[in-house]
Length: 115
Image 1 (cartoon, helix red, strand yellow):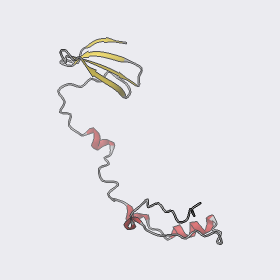
Image 2 (cartoon, rainbow, N blue to C red; image 1 turned 45 degrees about the vertical axis):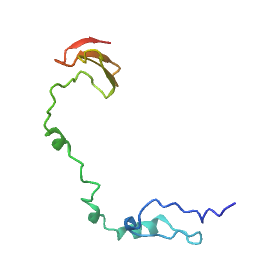
Image 3 (cartoon, rainbow, N blue to C red; image 1 turned 90 degrees about the vertical axis):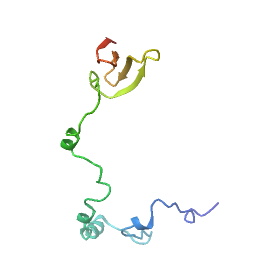
């Protein structure tokens, strides 16, 4: 059987390593020791990193312009499936989290029937 310490998995790049803490069996670390070590860590430098880019506040999301020709908003939850009438492409069938299915006209948004 192979030694499990010989098998290493690379989960990160070296540039991502901030600090390496050696956890040996001979040294017992208490939560107080860890708290003292974390007091020296400055998390303010991590603010505004690439992870935060692309995230928008709720106000910014509401301010986006809707360029759609038609919006069907009868569902009150997430929509799980959508299908179009293959012959005319005028009818859509949608079903969602609200346990409702709608057949509606894609030209004007009028509900043909609900089930």
